[in-house]
Length: 375
Image (cartoon, rainbow, N blue to C red; front, side, top):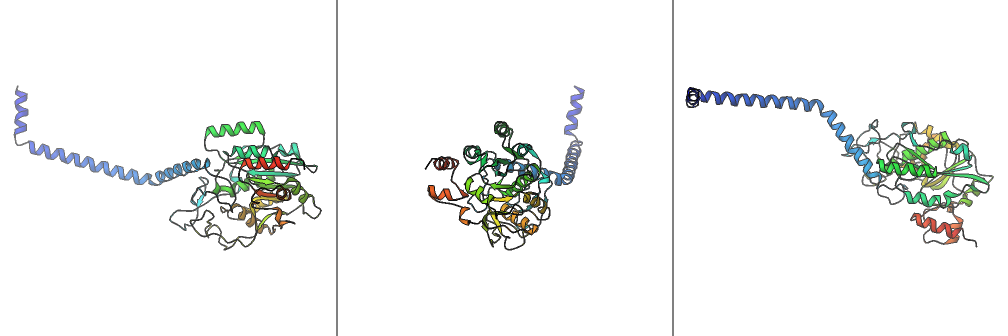
């Protein structure tokens, strides 16, 4: 009872205002100290936080895009699904900024990447005269099936051994990777490297192809980079390569591209900044849908790429590497054999060409079956 009386007296007495003021003052000091600590910690960790957040967002973007990006040609109407500020690797270094979005200088030289799936002994087993290297997205299973059942199934043309391999980048997830590895075990024709598989990274993909040819298949006489939606007239191609006037060194031919202007429109999927490529026009190059070359060039192009800053137009980049080497692409003896589109299918037209673009894997299968029918 005495204790209760004392508390009641304190509450009613002159000490109460002082207790309230002290309590409020302590709360204010505690709040200010917390704010100072929070701001200090945030300022100290801002750079790391921003870097980590940006890396996670970019990586998420990369892997989400893999399953929706088509690998194709610089002159075809494809969805350019990555912005030009893509970071290709964590070690990529930013270059000067020309828009509100930073542009990153990606590293295309193949020494920056390694093979996840490989067929290092394939060429020593087959000793091919000609190697087809097909850049294809991991999810494009139907395209690979169509090629395996048509021109990619041929192992000999006019008595010369030929070999077809597919090159892919990262799949974007463990389930897709497992399926790709199962496909690799079944067919033994897949090569995979650890770059992000996207339209923007076709330059990296092409340079990895060149590196594989130079290091795994140096004895092959010729190689061809050929896209996955292409028809190839194998007999016509082999006749070209076996012709007595076809060079065995420093030779590359296909659909010629002369005096092509560099696209500076930032809304274009073919946009290249002046920082990446300062000249107003590209050197002469071969359209990326399919070009054939003497295999000595693969290693030379890889070496030249050490001195040529990479940009995202892969076929023009190969042209820039050739210019660095002092090697000019050769116009084919019959330029009409390298065609972009033939239009509506006519048997006689396809019998004359070396390459042309098709609309679907099923179209390749249908055309191949018709062409193989006896006349």
